Structure formats: C-alpha cells, structure tokens
Length: 311
Image (cartoon, rainbow, N blue to C red; front, top):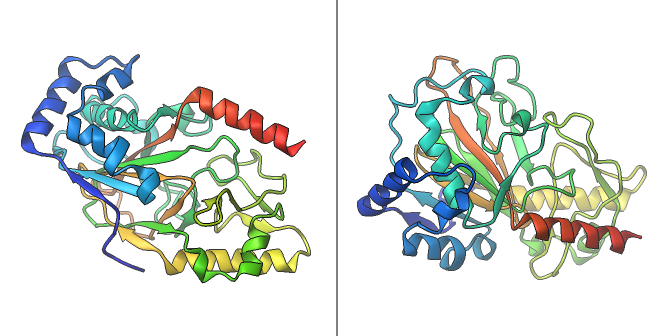
C-alpha cells in the first residue's frame, strides 16, 4: 500500500481562512448553504470545480482550515452525543460549503437519522462491525452505499481529530491488472451487493454489474465484504477476486489531519479505513462525513434512465 497519496491538494492561505471563517460566522443560512459556496475564494472554487476536479483525479484534498482541539471538546463515544454540538458547528458549515461546489448534500434515513453531516467516531460495542463507527475491524475497500442505486456521487470526509494518525484507505482501479476476459464478466450483471451493517436489510438483492461506462476508465461499484457472485457462477467469482486484488494492489493511505477535507469520486475510487484501537478517552479519531449528489434532479433522471434501460 502506498503511504504517500498522489491526489491533488489545495492549501488554504491565512487570508482565505479568515475570509471563509468570517462568512461562516456572520452570513450562514442553513436553508441556503450553496449560497455560501459561491462566496468561496475564487482559486479554491476553481480548484474544486475545475483544476482539481474530483472526476479528473478520483479524489482531492483541501487543507489548512484550523480546528481548535480544545473548543470542539472530547470525541464523543456515540454519534448521538455529537448532534447539535455548537462547538463543531463551524466545521460542519465549512464542510457543507465545500461540498456545495460539487453538488447537493443528501443522506439516507438509516444514516444517523438522516442527518446531512454524520459523525464517524468509534463506539463501544461497535468495534468489530463493518461501519464508520467501528475501530478494531478493517473497513474493507468499498464505494459508499454500494448496495444502493441511490448512492452518492461524491463522498466528503473532514477530520476534526486524529491523534493516532489512523489512515483512510483509497484506491482507483487499474484495469490493466485484470485480464480482458474477466473484465468482460465484471461488466455483466452477475453479482449482488448486500447492505452493510448501517443499512441492515435494505436492498442489495438484484443482480448488478460491478463495472459500467467507458472501458478505458469505467465506473465502479464494490464492497469487498458484502459483494458476492451469483450462486454457482465461478467465472464471476474469479472476476470479483481479480477486481478486489487489483484495488488492494493500488491502495494508497491518506492520513487526514485536523482541518483537512478529502472528497472522493464514489464512481471512480474505493475507500476504507485501517483498524485501530479506540481508547474512549475523548481523544479518539473524529471525522465528519457528507454524501453528495451532482444534483437531486440529475439523480432522479439517472435513476429513471436506469430503470427504463433495465426493462
């Protein structure tokens, strides 16, 4: 696994931080977060929407927004304890403002009650689950909510605390690592993806393809732990194993520091998290997460098109 990420990075200047903080404190309208996006410094907005665009690189980083470690308070041991915490409001607003450059933030009812910004903190009793609130369990490489046709286009993660330098895993697919015969299988509907531990019994039963789109850089849909070939389909099993091996051979480690944000294209790259030991002492890893769709209207139109194509 590569430990030095190759994704683009934008470093905020002190002047940019001051301008952004001023807007987030004085002019924030929770009903119109994308209005704030338009007020971002021009070079940063150009980076998010142009030169560093997620779809060009698979992922991008923004760093330099200071986090006050004392002000935010102890890392909660349950995401519910983070709800409405005033001390982290400005960081949620910052994440939402950046996300607005890529599309519209949305959530699922099963994700922490449908909150637009979720808190990823290690929780007692969740250590071995396959969810963002686990710790000792490897969070296998996956695309976010891979089981769902309504999954996000982009995923945003902002670090508030990471004293133990727990890395986020990231991998783009290199098809040259997979034989053409197996690639053909991956483009066929010969797989299922079960819902993860967060979504429990939702969806994931219809046969799907794991790759689609342009074969030179296909779109990806995978969850290493929850993806299966159709029963008895040995070529599909071999193709799945080859896909997973190709992703892990391309895996990079992105260690987020406080104030850093990574956006990942959920159709071009998989992500995960290495295991760690939670102490539950108020100093554990704390990440804010958002899911982003290009636009709600575009999302529904694409779903309609997929349904028509499937008929």
